[in-house]
Amino acid sequence: MSFDFFCVADNPTDYHDCFMRELIQKNPAEKEFHQAVSEMAKSVLPFIFEHPKYLEAKILERITEPDRVVSFRVTWEDDNGDVRVNRGYRVQFNNSIGPYKGGLRFHPSVNQSILKFLGFEQIFKNSLTTLPIGGGKGGSDFDPKGKSDREIMRFCQAFMTELSHHIGEDIDVPAGDIGVGAREISYMFGQYKKLSNRFTGVLTGKGIEFGGSLIRTEATGYGLIYFTDLILKHHGESLENKRCILSGSGNVAQYAVEKLIEKGAKVISMSDSKGMISIKNGVTREILAEVKKLKDNRGNLSELKMDGVNYHADKTPWGMDADYAFPCATQNEVQEEDAKELIKNGIKGVFEGANMPCTNEAVDLINEHKLYFGPAKAANAGGVAISGIEMTQNHMGLSWKRERVDEKLQEIMKEIHDKCVKYGERDGRVCYQTGANIGGFIKVADAMLAYGIN
Ligand code: NDP
Ligand code: 2IT
Image: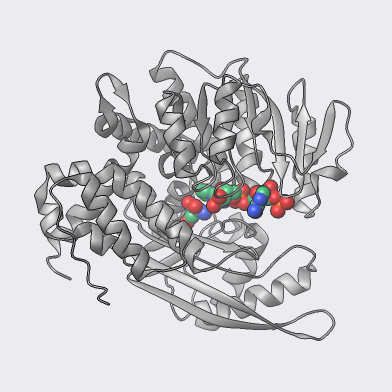
């Protein structure tokens, strides 16, 4: 059996099928990675066929092979004095346009397939931000739920002891993702500083006191809504008075809700891994503050007892009547059946706050029904964009004011929107999925071409 890529096909569809057969053979049992690559390849192959230089240089074959995947043991001690062992990873996918950049996820479901799909998508997302950052992702199957603060600290320190060999402010700059927020970043930054005896911007999402950027915490959620607003405005629509269903109740969800409220929209649901809340009259600032407090203490939405808030165990919001949907929890949370339900209920747009929250079949349905669609690579790029701006501030040794960073975030989301329109416009309609994929691909592919065969 040969693992050398060698597809010969005279059209994008056949090339995609042959390429995917080989990719699956080469990376068996990595279904999330296959999904992310197939989605991207389908979008960019017509463009690649129009520009044979990418085909001849085997850019697709090269860009789907990570530069390296590091996997390591993390040994730590729990509060009972028992020794615990987890697995840590860092996928350094592509540094053609800048140091590897992407979050760390701590969740029991973490495996190589999930981190490879996330690292792969990060390459194009980061390219779309216009900033010089490459793509990477990492994390661990460590479950922060039910752990004490001290256990989290010991785990983060043990994780960084190993990860520190592979990162650096000009090499690879991790940040947060599911299960990794300000507290975990602080423990990891403190450990890196201690091990290296250097104070550098090796992580983003840091505390404001030690090199963090204002607005980084809010950036993904705010950016998602800025991007949604741009799509809607481009089509003469707005968010005002629109009923929005949203999943998740973590970092991305919280700040998306805050911005939606500010834009005059009505958010009628939030969720977590155990169930959802429906809020008939819309989430208020008071409800949102309680959700935040609850989630900061790692509680469940079932514990939220407030007037006008109803809890539904084991439910997702996709069966509710609404104008727009914002999946902000995790991958594949909107399946084909959910998309059918959304469409049946008259949804007008889906905007992805999470990474790959819609399955490929769900996205196909969304496109077939010509709904507005904000694909994750573009729609949630605000977080990493402000991480890039945090790196810039660290390099310059200064910190920007809140207004300046927020303005920069809006400017970047606008540039991403314009790029989606530029590369996604077909027959008078903008396909944001195609636009984001091609727009993100070109810069990285051209850099790879410039480096020759390497
Ligand atoms: P958080 O850990 O802050 O919140 C995650 C939320 O999603 C929680 O409400 C959690 O519920 C829920 N969730 C997690 N796993 C599952 C699951 N398997 N099924 C159902 N619900 C689940 O993470 P973030 O808000 O940072 O991340 C959310 C998404 O946004 C992820 O896809 C992430 O990759 C993406 N993203 C994050 C960015 C960032 O800057 N943080 C940037 C760009 C994208 P519970 O509380 O019960 O665990
Ligand atoms: O998915 C993502 O873009 C993130 N988790 C943020 C990455 C970053 O480096 O800020």
